Length: 274
Image 1 (cartoon, one colour):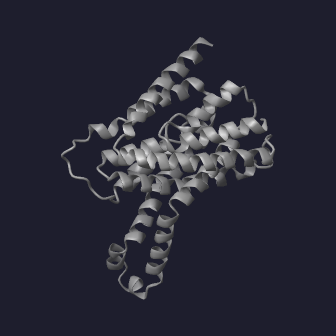
Image 2 (spheres, one colour):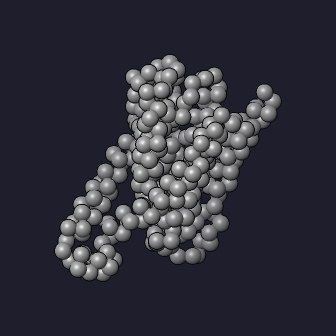
Image 3 (cartoon, rainbow, N blue to C red):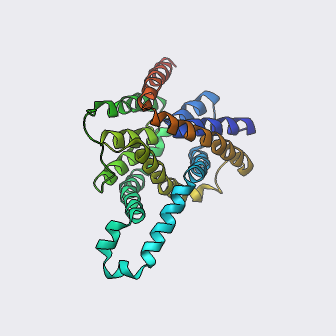
């Protein structure tokens, strides 16, 4: 892999990680088009670390609030005297617990099906089909009746969204698109859906890095090239995340579905012809 190819893939990752169009699916198609032969799963994971940094920057205030509020509750003696009552009054601790609850099914899916899911990185036809599926999933919020009142994020929502995130490990399935679409369908307000989705991605990405850290010494890609890709992913990812949040506020989230469906059909046709 060359320096320019790494930057290109980093830019692609930054654009597609937050826009609901599947970063892994685009990376598979781009890598196939560029004719790259190296095992690129580790490189893909490291690009996700670059976009993770963008999440930490954009949501730094929310993360700081959760950290301070959660720690303050835990060190309060009242919490240990009446944990149930104190827990219900701590918004920050409840949100942290929902992130942990949603992370469990994601982790289980990743551990049990890691090898199978990684093998899909070489299946262009499957990735194309998954892109079409992502497009259909993005239409899910439109099935919710508009006159139904919105609801806050609840405990039973977390594992469902966590399962959706776990399934999105499959290349071609958008993590942000799947989790946010499901949250919107469940009636969770757009701002909360986005915040929960992206904060939920933090333990998921960190877990993926832990699972792949042993491959650092075996990767055929020089680390300075990996770093260039990560930096590109961070910068472009920051801009893309800001853009997505603006689109969500305008209620135009499902418009990305048409792009996913079109790209899926085109790439599937090309793969069948070759």
